Image (cartoon, rainbow, N blue to C red):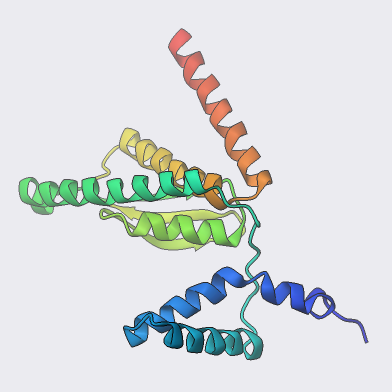
Length: 198
C-alpha cells in the first residue's frame, strides 16, 4: 500500500502548521476571554487534538517572515481602514443613493492559497470593498467596490489591491512570489515611463 506525502512526513507536516496552531490557541483564549497560562495551555492541547483528528486542509507556509514588511503592511492596512472609513462616510453624506458601484476583477500574481486568502480578507476589511467571489484556478478576486464609476477608478482600485497583495508577499510570501511581484512592478514602471516619453 502506497503512502502519501502526509503519511511519509506526518510529523514535519503537523508541526509545519504551527501558525494555525497558534491561531486556534489564541481563538480559544478569546472565546474564554482569558489569556492566562492555564487557559492557553488548554487551548494548545485542544488545538493539537483538532489538527490531529480532523483532516483540515494543509496550508503551505513559506517559512519566510520579514518583520519590517509585516509592520509596514500592518500600518498600511490600518491607515487604509481609517481613510476609507472617512471617505465612505463622506460619500454617504454628500452623494447618498447617487453613488455608483462596480464589480472589479483583480487577477492576483500569487497562486498560493494563503496569500490569496489574506489578500481577500485585507481588501474586504477596508470599508468600501467586499469580496463577492474568488476564481481559484486563475487567482482572481471579484470585489464589489463603492464609488467606482469609471475606467480610471477601476484601474486605481485594481492597482491598490495589487499593492496590498505585494505588501503581504513581502512580509510572508515565498521567494518565487516575491520575484513575480518584482518583475510585475518593473514591467509596470517601464510601461509608465514609456507612456510619459510617448
